[in-house]
View 1 (cartoon, rainbow, N blue to C red):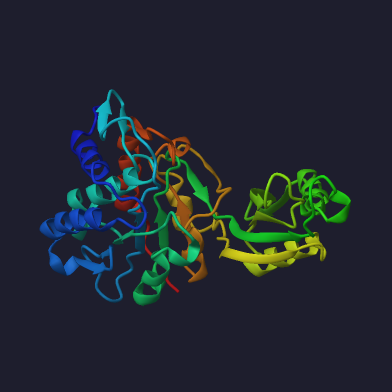
View 2: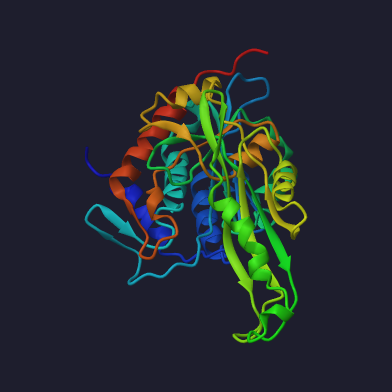
Length: 365
């Protein structure tokens, strides 16, 4: 299979434009100019530093499924030893995998396809601030502002997945668990109450806690609770009176963030304060949905559960089925000298090409 040089050039151009979270404007400007030139100004709507693109809306009443491809513009702030570049079958640069490979595929589809002849109504969503807290992610305001998106039949988030279709999304809750004691001189620790010792039994309980496996729609999700950050202590000769743990709870679809907070509070059992800081809902797998089943036949490398959170959960919350599928190398996300395999990029484009050309009509009723 010959390499797709134009697609690779598109990815290189995107990767050469820095877009760390909060600094997506230049990349948004670039994509907006490119798509307006190709599709016309009426097809592209700017929302802050995000874009909603409807290149060829279907007429009312047409039996064409409405499909959205969604990709975030931002990257995490990683370090790189050189500029964006191609070296053999690898393309290096911030966001090369997560998720500018997906953005390149989205752009190439609407630039190349005969959109009027497609058996689907295609929408592209390019959005900012995905790599930060749930509440700052701009996809939420986009789905509130553009209410016609609630009528989508399927949303595909092009997160890096090595062209594997990943179903659903784990919910995620971050909470600060605060253990309090009393200070004293470290030479006379019996005069104080060491907050570290207060936290120790709870940490040991978490270390021996097995994942809880939940099966939905024929797919298994593993619920886990993990301490990820610790902060405490006043000085090296002071008995600490406070220890703060960031605890991350990952929960399966069918439960709410509030359920996860309640479970964590029950585990703490009054030994500390629990302060929720970031609550993200879960997304159902939709494995039996006909469009999901059709996508699975279009050349994906496999189908499995998504053991992490993605914006599939936001679509599920408004009643839109969603899946994760992207050409980026998942293991390269957020890495120093991040790169992606260009062979995956080429094949990823062909998967989406097959899908949009062969998607079955919307079922009556």
